[in-house]
Image 1 (cartoon, rainbow, N blue to C red):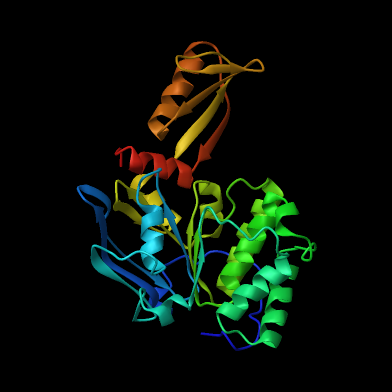
Image 2 (cartoon, rainbow, N blue to C red):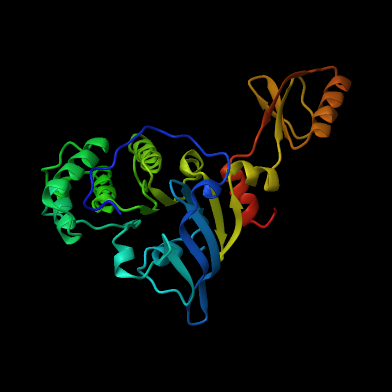
Length: 316
């Protein structure tokens, strides 16, 4: 852990790994049969997965799927009913391990009478970070997050600025593992893009990140692999490309000069969406029989949102 080392550096956007990098670097975080129950209610049914060093691992699912409960067990804040979570081989519930994890909850109240700088310095003191190291780390993080009003009281800051401060708080101890629960929730598109890019830069600098968000475009942009949860279970897991191969299919947008069954008129043309090449050829034959022609054909690969809906609705 780099608590008393130099400020971590950022190396720019890294892009996606095309395969699970664990074979190269080994797991930094390991969830082994994590289960959490509250009486007869099963919040998490027995999740198992590994996250490699420098990987961004997406955890997605509908409300109530068990994502936040899983994150809280990984952070050592919630004791599993069964199973075990480890960080670099150490039990997540150990105090020393928790000091090496940066936790960003979806709702993160701040001390509104403190400024961003004094708030972060306070948490650095709690972690025992030397003042000089803390000052440099705080300044570096706030610079990268473009948070200029660092001496303004947090109660007077915008939601976006407050969220950036919460992210900086998760980094003040320079942890190796970061757990981000809806890091860009409710933020404007510009701030959201900055948070997603910053997450990628953290991983490029060697951080291991578990990233949970309802906006699946964010997840697809930044995550190397994704686990989809439903009713407390992980029901699909892998790279987006791997999930696409297993659970998706190519669809086609066919533009015709004449109407056919199922087409929609748009600007004098007729658009038909079909799921396979045979249906494209059928549309061509029907258009020709009606005295028309195919004007354009475009294929579309399913994105993570399409795959998510197929998996959670039980179609895949």
